[in-house]
Image 1 (tube, rainbow, N blue to C red):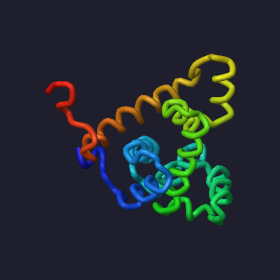
Image 2: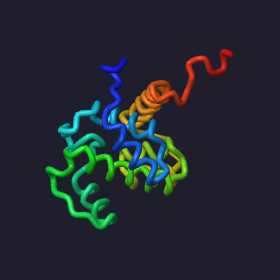
Image 3: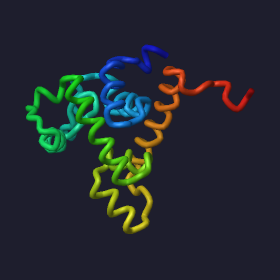
Length: 155
């Protein structure tokens, strides 16, 4: 299980999550789902790094934080985690729901706002599957982090 669901960069993840009050297991699950912890990952659509941020989004987030980053910086663990956690925090605050925030992380805020306005649910199968994969990985990381017991409910 350690090979399939690695626990890498825990100090950086924990630190950034604690700063912003974001669930560490959620971030670990997003990283696993997005890049399988490959800091050099680049998606077919151009998302970069551990947390697979689109460069334009990453530059905007960095600017909000008063930082300046370039494309190669997005492959650095510290930068990807800092910007990714910050983005998740923005989405969690805006939408007030983890599932909806994950939809926005995957499909974009504009799409999610439109879906909510139309009441259409999640029309993108990729996004529905993404949310399920993150939820599954979050359960695994909750077990690995000792946050959840496999015996809970069976006691």
